[in-house]
Length: 292
Image 1 (cartoon, rainbow, N blue to C red):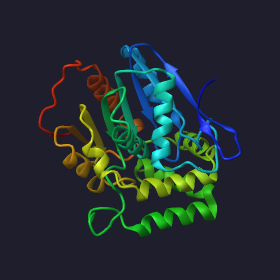
Image 2: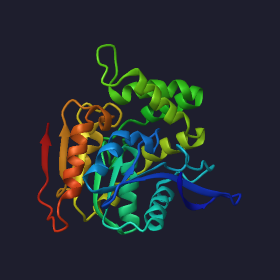
Image 3: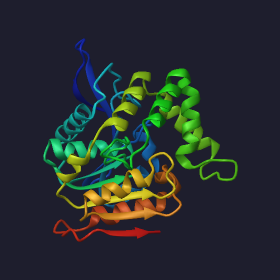
């Protein structure tokens, strides 16, 4: 298995990120959502390398097969981890694709490191620009929602993860967009994470304001969000991200839940391939919203 060292913890132990590295061509780095791991990109890892792309998916610290230190779950540290990966693999002309929590890493990396090595970014069901409802962010999500999540994790993490997984894909009594087997697989992915990482990352994506970070992005940008996303509501995220990035391409997947990388996998894969394969001389055009 492949690992990259990103630092050491307070006790001098190495902190390493596990990653998959498939295909050849211009690199695409996939950043996973909470509370999963890089293996959530199963359908993208099976398709994107067919299109002359080098596709790298890594496990965030605390998740999957990566090291699980006690701390370091703030976005400055997570962006630093991403930089260490890009530097160690000496990747250039990179497309960063951030799903859900991973969109925060994209935004913070682009701001903190001036977009070094990156030529394009994509936000898929992203938590940007700022999820928490505040006086100056009235379209955000009420704090009680996040408090309830944290309470559920602390009370019974396994039960919380199983319930959360159903909401993730819009599973209910009449709708079954993914199988029970898939939900079981996601539970296994999520339960590999440390308890601390699960809690602290939830706090990070709920409380971190990325509005300034987004204004620093100067490369071609793709925003994709499902309009039936009950986990990261489009009104609090995708729409506001598009407003802050008026030259981005904004695509709304009609009827899609949060886990659209599975439920809309063919559509998402096609959109990512098209975006990555655009010429390097691509000129950003005024924002156009497309609803499928």
